Image 1 (tube, rainbow, N blue to C red):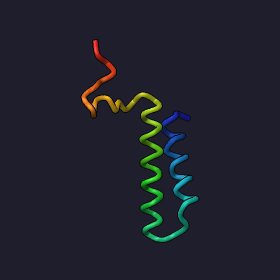
Image 2 (image 1 turned 135 degrees about the horizontal axis):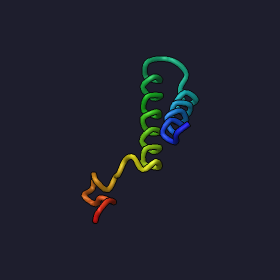
Image 3 (image 1 turned 180 degrees about the vertical axis):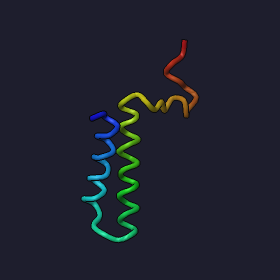
Length: 60
């Protein structure tokens, strides 16, 4: 299982633990899942935050 998938599952689990039922709780789970996915993509190196700030890590 990749780090990205593990981060997504972790975020979804934490969201599920934080909320039990209803539409607003569903949104909380979605936000936690997105946060988990974002963190895992950064750890995997598939998302470069330096590109967003103008400082890229793949300079020559």
